[in-house]
Length: 318
Image 1 (cartoon, rainbow, N blue to C red):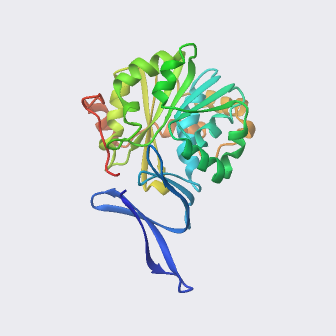
Image 2 (spheres, rainbow, N blue to C red; image 1 turned 180 degrees about the horizontal axis):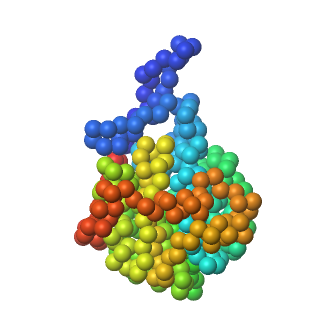
Image 3 (tube, rainbow, N blue to C red; image 1 turned 180 degrees about the vertical axis):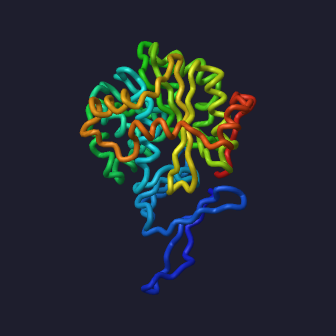
């Protein structure tokens, strides 16, 4: 596992401070001071650590990579969930691939018009520890509209022939060598599994890795171009997430036109979301974060790489 927990610095009381260290690149590391290790285990599928950090609160780490932090996970999860739900005319059913920590489901369940949310996560232990330790998601896990299934999302979607969804969400780990999520980013999966499981005006959205000026070519632009091979309308958007030390990217796709209208979006927020309880997303920002800087925009427009079984990508790490 490419992370370490070390005693290196003494605080003002003369006590050693433990640090979690993640390898972002071969020559770049990111360190967080920690209070304690709440959970650490190797499951059937991955290495899982839950840390209590001094700066970001509780932090979930999978295969050596930070997935989310208590203090700012709302940025990632609001960005993942609300644009798709707000661009859809009347979403009722949501399927979340991964999402075992419950935060994506929590955001989806804020919409009063949602009748059913399905989480399909491969790792029961991740679901268990997040249910136990992440207090912000307790209400979501207790919501009768939420159905948690422990299974590979691909297998689950394949076997549920009678069901289609208004929105399908990829709340997945970045691809790693031998990782459990790699096949959920491929063109064949989008074309033969995702697309047939969407209703006529359905929307697919997935996290797409880092999207900074120096990091976007590793994966983000390939996910965008792969989605373009399958869907008629594709939008990429980005937001900075402090705990992840970079800008993150998402890709949203549909076969129906996606209309970014600030007045319509604001009205939907007021009508659908309990107390309009969003910390990060509003209509103006939804329009703004679809605008890329020149470097990233140029890459997206010129990207030719398509993710296939013969051309998978594995990012740096465990």
